[in-house]
Image: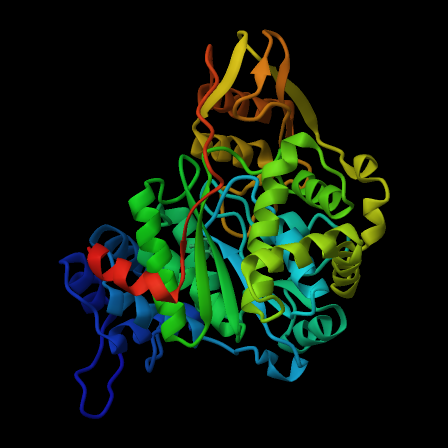
Length: 466
Ligand code: URA
């Protein structure tokens, strides 16, 4: 309970019941709950705030939805739940990119060093595996010694030295998202536009960004699969971030198949470093292309290029001349990691068990249920069942055939890596169910379907309001 002069006292149970019954919470009620989530205690009182109550509120918010005003209040309260980073004295424009969650999405490891190599600061606060999607931090941590829970002063030192740093929420940095993110993962409350918006933007706004590029996924592997739902989320995030003073664009991108050829932890990092080394495996072309598009926008919004197209050219040059790779290794070392592990990445990869999935008939790899593939990846051991559990750095799935590839019966289409051979069974079954092989090639799907900026987002949002 909290008693403020001139206000009726607040009680957690009243806030849960109000949302459960379809009411609209005011900013004070939302701030009360968020402060409770961040500290684990009831604001202004001596008791602790049980996770059951936070979970009940999350489910009520998930089922009833959050209005625009509620989403804005939640975002700002979560942003303000801990310390904030001020990048202004780095002497560079601070820019970042965040995705709404995907399978095999490792663009952060490309765009962060590319943008830094182009002269921008990239203070990236990231998350762990969520639902069926992978987490940037879980992918970075297999590197021996690499730390992601930095203090603000360590974050600043790495940024000053390297131009980019990838860190986690901590008990002092966006603590409310740290708690709510893990709880949403365990309570089936991930796929909510308002909760996704507040989770992503609280981290991005706490990093003090000047500009932000959002990669909003659509298709079978996205949290919001339908195009109109993804458009709603994109415009909600652009409008919310712009109102908070951060120049923002959102690109709607295809998550109808995993991005690139690896989905897991270490194997994703290896794929990203291959591209930073200018290698071009054909199965990684979509990843390379999307990374250049996103980085082009970062470079443009950061003021280093007049258009996203010229931004892209600068991004390509930073990759091709090796400067982005140099930034990436420097950042790893500055966060305590041993970048020497990339001298021979195959030698470091020691999965407990390996199995190939072969084509059960001849034809073309067609539709895939990418959410199911994401769950298959998580269940190899690459994800966790409970918050705080370690993940297996070596687990995951490597794809040898992508959408549209023609395969002969018996040809390997994927290799699965798991902690134990018993753990291979469920993911192999899920993967088989998730992939269709058809007699005709599938239609090509564009990588980017729409772009929202402050110019078109508000109007779209007003028409789309639920
Ligand atoms: N990424 C986040 O940080 N939060 C979400 O809710 C989804 C993706």
